[in-house]
Length: 44
Picture 1 (spheres, one colour):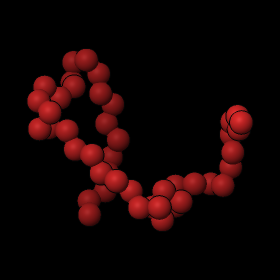
Picture 2 (cartoon, helix red, strand yellow):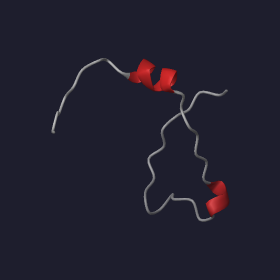
Picture 3 (spheres, helix red, strand yellow):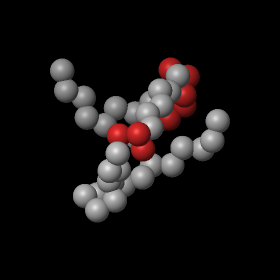
């Protein structure tokens, strides 16, 4: 799988056609790898 890179979307460069959009799901293991184990804003 290729490296995913975030892209800022503005009014000028937004996709004009829904076919240009791509969504991917991350596995629980991948999401956990992004975590530092730190809670920055806990609201209950």
